[in-house]
Every structure is written in structure tokens, then in C-alpha cells.
Image (cartoon, rainbow, N blue to C red; front, top):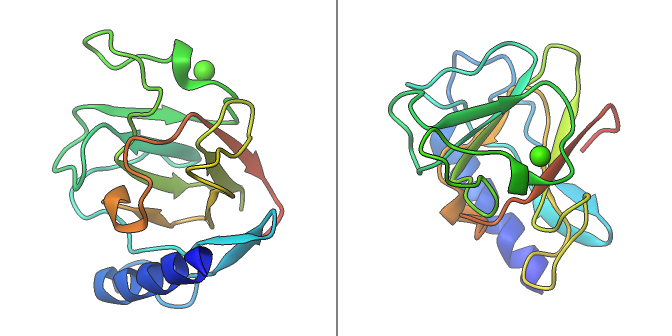
Length: 156
Ligand SMILES: [Ca+2]
């Protein structure tokens, strides 16, 4: 029941935020069933901030207006505790906006636990197809929750 409620909320958000300039914005949204828990759908691309091609980007605050407090990876990272914002604060449990800007058709799955695991508070994961993200993770109940992510070619 809980998972279904989340998925419905995300779909409504995706419809409201779809950006027509993205090739993925309308048709690329998917709902993923991971570990038996449905969590994910893609939302529109972020408007102001940028993310280098091929990277998974996270921002420290919701609805970022710039790339201040952006962090990015070109591959998987099983533990955010040793990644830091410019002021030295750990990234762990701090991403508030995310975007998968993969150039290799890689899907990104963000987890609330270390080493690509779930937590009781956040079962499953947030799965993003290329070009998809969430400018405000509060919309799906994942604000300040990410602790690891994986790149994979497995579809969301
Ligand atoms: Ca790390």
C-alpha cells in the first residue's frame, strides 16, 4: 500500500514537471519495481543547474538554482560518508535533488543504505533512466536519505 501511494505521487509530479526540451521527458518515465517495492518514476530535467554528460549529479538543496553544492560521479559509489561538500560536510544522507545525465544508457539507482542496500525507512531504491531526475526529493520522501548509488544497464 505504501509503495503504491509513493508511485502515484511521483507520477503526478512527473506530469507536472515534464520539460519538453528533454528527449526523455515525456516517454522516458518509468515506474520501477525493485526488491518487490515500487518506488520510482522519472521527473523532468532540472531547469537551471547543469550536470556533465555521463555523470550522476546530486545537489545539496532542493530545487537548486545553480551548481553551487553540486556533486557528481561517473560511476557507482557504495558509501557517501567519504564524499564531502565544499565546506567539508559529508554527503551522506544529504542529497536533496538528483539527476542521471548518463551518456552510456546507464541507469542509476540511489539507496538509503550503504553498499546499495535498503533501509526500513526507505525500502527499494530510486531508479533513474538516463536524463531523469528529481529536483525536489521531498516529493517522493527521499530528501536527505541517499547513502549510495549504483550504475547499471538494467532497465528501471
Ligand atoms: Ca564514497
